[in-house]
Amino acid sequence: MNQKIYVVTKNRYFGHRRTLGFFRFQNNDLYYDFGSLKGSHNSYHRDGSQWRTSLATRGKPKKEKDHIPLKSFNGLFNLGTICVSKNIINKFPKTKQKYYNKYITYEVDLDSFPSEHINIVCELLEPNYIIPLAEEEKCYPPEAVNKTFNTTNPWLSITLLGHENNLLIIPGETGFKVNHFNERFTANKEGQSYSSELYSGDAYDKYGKEI
Image (tube, rainbow, N blue to C red):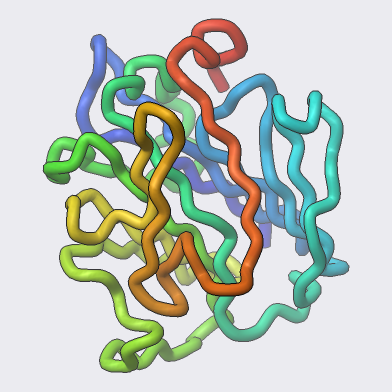
């Protein structure tokens, strides 16, 4: 089944709702991105390969790793954690009405979170996969907001973190701080290497485009 999901703001900024990101399930492949800078996107394919195309890769697909083939996915898998700063929301693409008419839209109330930064944790779940909520290494951080889409295959889970006590990634003046909550929710897992891309409002002014 082919489906496209847009993650958009519930409120309007400078007169428009803003598009934070999208997920497109297409023929046993998955394409997704947050920010929409000059065609940037991730892809996870039926053979298990994962790729990134962005300003950091100079617009060319770069293979990052391999995992379970998407067509035979099982278990739980973290696609990545995105940090969004409220002070550049107005630079994100305007949300088009056709997203509501043709696709699934998930509205995020950014103003309901007290922090100036929002973390969005994206995961894939095997259909009907049961997460033991009481299990310490898989439970949600306090005050987390979760939305699971069970019409996709595999299922898509989006967890929002926007309180100072649950953020995994916190930008600073000279970089960013990464935190660890448990094995499932972490940006600082021992022995694991990570890749990151940091974009300011200037990058959106120069490279941003409406999608």
